[in-house]
Length: 321
Image (cartoon, rainbow, N blue to C red; front, side, top):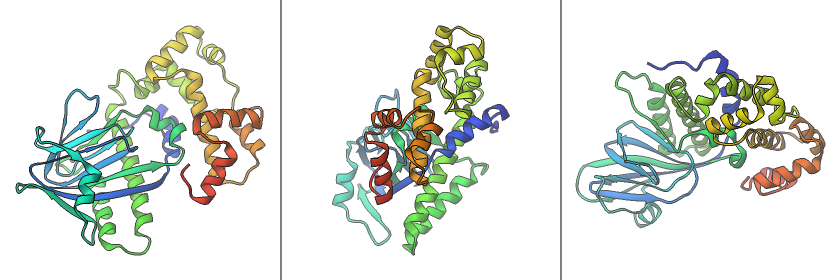
């Protein structure tokens, strides 16, 4: 049974989801006969759908591999190096080398491996707008694993995957754009599933932080009023705790200090307005909580690797941003 995210957490959770926008996604459709194995280096957020069959996933740094079954959906949120194989001891090769050596058919399917049972996958990557400053991407665990449920409680997973496969097979007008939107829905649903399943049990991380009476209130204040001239001291006063105790608890649960988290929120808000409006930089700076364009530009370049003007121009021309 999925426990809904509590009402007090809705505003912060919704604010995180609003900031997620895919600017691109790409897909591969391997059909692999056992034994097989491949590795994926750090190429950004990656996902795998097990259309049929089963396999094992090992993410670099994880204690043990994860068993995947038909209908499962996984996201390697931070793009950590990982490997997939059947069975676990199978030698692995680089995924992109494997794909290059086996040309796909007209539907993008490529076939490789041995002579055993077949596992069909949809493997791909997700490129997010404003990934460097997005607060949600920073607080997710390294791996999201959405398991198919026999009772059909996650019918959204089956239906969305079927829709993606149908679009990939059709090659119709606008298919690529539709698939990008469907991938975004898959990601958001996976995040919501993770939040709902762990909201009342997480001991550390963002979910534990938002449940904490004081840190949860601080997160609500930061998300609700990111433009306010917050300091660690002013937040601590609002919560009636000492500055040092608040800073330590926030960092322990959220994984980064309060001001760094606030900066991420502000840069994300500024980037959103740069992408979606022609507002002047002075107005964007003020709305994001900066007292000057220069202050915004300094913080923006530190997080995004480019100035606000360069970022806006990159978005207009369709280049990576």
